[in-house]
Structure formats: C-alpha cells, structure tokens
Length: 131
Image 1: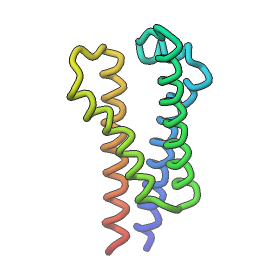
Image 2: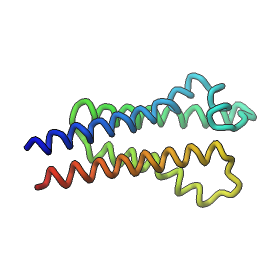
Image 3: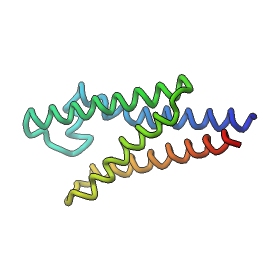
Image 4: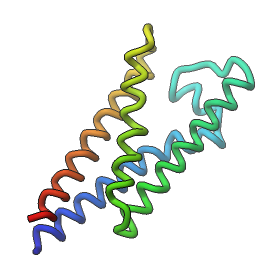
C-alpha cells in the first residue's frame, strides 16, 4: 500500500509541474509583449495578437485543470488526456510546417519532454494502482 501512496504523490507532483509549465504561456494573455521575446515572433497586427492571446488563455484552462487534478486527487485520466493533447498537438502541427525558428523548436522540445514525463508518471501510477 505504501508504494501506491508514494506513486500517487509522485504522479500528483508531475501533474502540478506540467500544469505550472502551462502557466507561463497562459500569462501572455495579459502580457502580450512577453510573447515576442519568449516565442521569437513579431506581433505584426492586432489579429495575430488576438489569436496568440486567445491561445494563451486556452493554456490557462489546461494549466488550471492539471493543477485541479493534482491538488484534488480527481479526474487524473481526463487531466492527462487534456495535457497530452495540448502538448503533443504542437508536435503534430510541426510536421506540416517548414522553416520553424529555433525558439519555437525549444518550445516543442519542452512540450515533448513534459508530455513524456506526464505519460510516464500516469502509467507508473496506473500500473501500480491496478496491482
């Protein structure tokens, strides 16, 4: 039984970490000037800014749900699913677009690394729980 508690604690910590990773881009909804330096993109007009700020708010929703799951011990499977979709969708879309700048590649690597961590934590917790 002690292994399950420790695995759950580790998994909840991973959920909180991945949720926190989503908080940084979520903050860009209220600080659009940070998008320029963080993503290496130029906000060429108000339409692009609106789309990126909306994207930032969606990251906030994902962050909130991951943190909710971590702290309430509820809806683990749903949180992992949403987190993985959020992070791996960039990897999928990357395959359709050429000439990505280096800064965005770093974002891609962070997302893939966090997705692997989240999946590994969830699998470890789930497999131990089912024993």
